Amino acid sequence: MIIFSKTYLIKPDHNLDLVWSLRKADEALNAKAYSVTDVISPLGIDHINDFYSNGDYWWPDPSKIDGLPYIRRDGYSNPDSFMYHRQALRKTRTAIAHLARAYIITKKEKYAMKAIELLTVFFVNKKTAMAPHLMYAQAIPGLFSGRGIGIIDTLHLVDIPFALSALSGSAALNENLMMALVDWFSSYLNWLLTHPYGIEEQNQGNNHSICYFVQIAAFALLTKNTVVLNYCRNHFKSTLLKQMDRDGSFPKELARTKPYGYSLFALDNLVTLCQILSGPEDNLWQYEDAEGRSVSKGISFILPYLLDKKSWPYQQDVMYYADYPARMSFMLFAGYTLGKQELLDFYSSLADEPVNEEVRRNTAIRQPFLWL
Image (cartoon, rainbow, N blue to C red):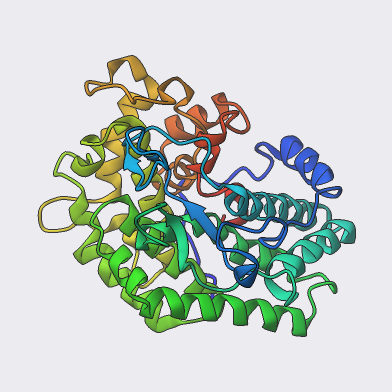
């Protein structure tokens, strides 16, 4: 795995939230090894290894006897959507991330061995592993069996390359297992880059495009694909930053029914992409386009509304507005790199983790200190 050296204006405090992290790692020692094969999706037994999910904001049409085709209610999540595979993926990622941080701090093999168990079940064992594609993500009953925007469902897997780096000192992560994991992510990366769904997703022009590039950058880092990493850097400069207005806001996110949450989400992932891709030869933290757009400008726009949410001048989110802000990795990455103590202090003032499941789903990284 390629690791780019970083320069921090404030030295990262690796003891921050460590007590919570170790407690979560101890809980993860008893965690179930989840698999997409645990629950058969509406696709049926022939697709037992295929990831499946439904679109969040799609509901049965009350005017139709069978409810089909579903209709869209933007911003309102349907609690009856098929969610098991999403939950299995996130719970697996979360447990592995906690275990990896505990291992790198304590060097206790019990944490590494449990992480390896979870990795093997979800990615390696042929009977239980998720197939490395997203053909059936965010399906809409009566309309689509899958969609390109469903690729955002695997955003949480970006923690895995950094967890593997943390676990690399353990004998439990042997060469054969590591090769199998790299093969899985190589196959998935290839699918993301070549399938029409992947091409569609990278061209969405909103938070979905940002999240697509976060994923392919993280997976390219793991698989040492320098061509894709360079592609991501160029796209960051030429296209993704242009989602930002000159004042640092994201107009397409502000136009949604949840403008506060989506603005935070877009910025969080743009900063994450900057964290992945920046190195001594190309420091995206300092990059500014011809019209003044930059990661720093995005931070400057949102910071007043983090510190004083009541000053938010736009409409309130139709759901979960009271649950934000929550801890997000951009607060640490930007705080340490750009020397913004107020972001670090604000992060420390928030609860260790969001209580609301929807907010947790929209927080891509569970263990940012694996990235520092």
